[in-house]
Image (cartoon, rainbow, N blue to C red; front, side):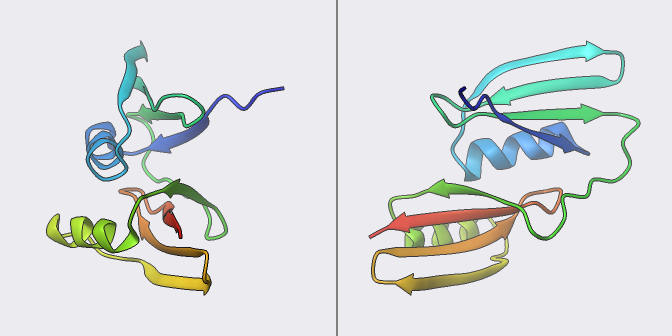
Length: 120
């Protein structure tokens, strides 16, 4: 068995695409309208893939507080600077629970926690 992707329902596809391309650094690999009022986009390469689904009828999105998506970065400090330059907020952190890892969280446009992790 092999993991395919994580599917995220989003309220605004353009806003979410901007976040996942400009902040997370994923590439759009496929984008199409599946039915009237519903558009789907796939992002990422290799083992990191996300499917974004935007349905015009969807008014609210709720992921819950106990789920996050984690992405490895070369430098937590550089990522924090990028986020601040873009006028975005850090949700929590940075944390360094041991000498080998450092991370922080921010929220995507729909409130999903995104974790950026530096392996030291």
